Image 1: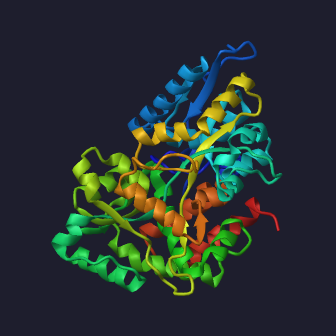
Image 2 (image 1 turned 120 degrees about the horizontal axis):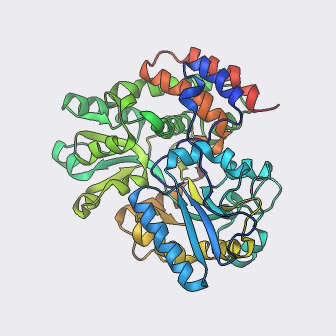
Length: 437
């Protein structure tokens, strides 16, 4: 996913939206979204044109994609007609879009969310493309790109880690030490609050409620480990399990140190407060770098892995979502689209993209990392050292379940964090609607 937003896929049917919306006080109207539409033509589409549906509407990814499509056009003689839609609208309209007349190639995400559309036959397999590009990717990346049927449906472009970001100069000025354990993390947050800072930058207003999932995932991973987290995400265990309650109990310890007014703030504004030294830390992805225009500030940004809660799990798991591309189920220019996807999967293309947007990491093993800045190098090391890699809650689970049940529930809870049992009971009451035994 491009970094500007991580809003989950909309529900699979409006009826389900109404049931869950009423449960958590969010009506169907609040979950409705504008419709993403294709920019390509019908059966008589130009064979020299490939249509491309992009969620990279913010300035940096838009410029990066323009660099990539321009290079492909020059290399192939084909024209790429790009349909750029803001990230939130893209996410919420994706099901309707794919069932209509979508663009030939579209941006999307690896793992479960790709597999969901592959299973619904709303995209085309790409085994022949992978015959060309496959030698340049690791086994782990290949696995993320396959559907449940073993066929390839996804071409990766980049990944990026989530961690706890901060400004080095602020820590030096205030004498703060990087925490490794939960107790140290809470103590640091408490000290920052006493010093007049917002300890944890936070903005989950409007369409940015996805941003709370990074903290939820890490608290759960550190409290209960990777296996339980993935079982919870895949609907295999109950949300009323005492281990899930332990996650909210820990998260509740951190809640008093979140930036005030987070429910009315965008993630970008929250990130800016970190850059302005008004907030001390932010649980966020490397895409934070897209907010930075001053290279001196970029050089002052650092991060540390989310702290250990239970020594049995340590800091083994890292959230590192992978973004890339898919082929629509009935592309108007299949040959041209597959040629474009082969280009997108190349090392040179990743280098072109990262040359414009240095807030991501190339996943092609042959892509040069010589131009990486310090944050990119440290990010690559963090991912390489991980014993387990999760994608993100709205990618590791049924997207409709996350967007219409989990997110409304956790957002409401975070505004008034109590013991969490009532919230978990409400979430559990909807699990069977999305997962079968």
